[in-house]
Image (cartoon, rainbow, N blue to C red; front, top):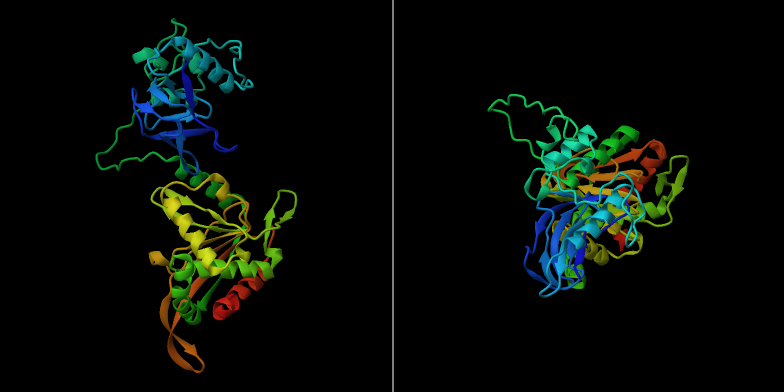
Length: 403
């Protein structure tokens, strides 16, 4: 009996995924638990494992194709087993029922009006069908294996198919740059941050802080932290600890907009913005106020490593009180971040610069860092945010209070 490999439901909010790599090809032997292919979702990449051991057969989707959650992607056959269309028919009915909103069961009947057949279409045909609101189940495909093509969707009436006007192809100047399709992650970042900037009334508080003592504390603590955690401490680690301590002193900051009220959070969880080549992820350091500097350094290093490998889990990016984003290592002096909803704040840190400043009646060279706090004005006001930023400033000037 063939075993189906489906696109798994990683998270309640995820409805589709894009196949970015096949680790196995048709005819390969796979072992239960072995990675067969990798998908990219809105937030993470995910390794899909073989549910059983056997021979991989009937790979239905290629690299770059988007697949709905619950869809049969491939099959695993037993040793010496021969493929039978009955396996496909049974799965096809299940997929059609799922796409039509029918509750999935082991053997659901095909919904009325949906023929129990396999539906395969090219990416162009899927896009045309989505834009023109055409049900692909009504279309007969002329491509290999019955696959529906863009041409099939433009056939004249008379063969039971719907007419789709040809796509207008404008003349493209030879100087025009290449359009790069959005990844699922970049598409989600664009959507969520646009919604945030349009719907959340941002305001910003900025200050330039003396970090001589903070940098000295980092230098003094580096060998101790590295010995305890195996990780070199960073200014971001110190900033995480400082922010968590300041939140503990100002519980009025640890809130979220709840639509019809303000939700006070019971835990202090700090999101850490991690830049990737493909976008950005924000894993959350949980109960950050209860962690030592060594623990924070260890958690931060693990998050950065796994984020770069695409192995951050969805549940590790939920429940943040606020987020810290540090572009100092990339040479940025100051910037104005966008709040990561439903959080109420995000703290941006710039690079450390040596500047001539007035200090104790003299002009001296001191290390300085710019901080900018973005605040949701629906839940917090300027005075409240200023007091919170003032506590962060105090702890940066007296880092020994953290130990």
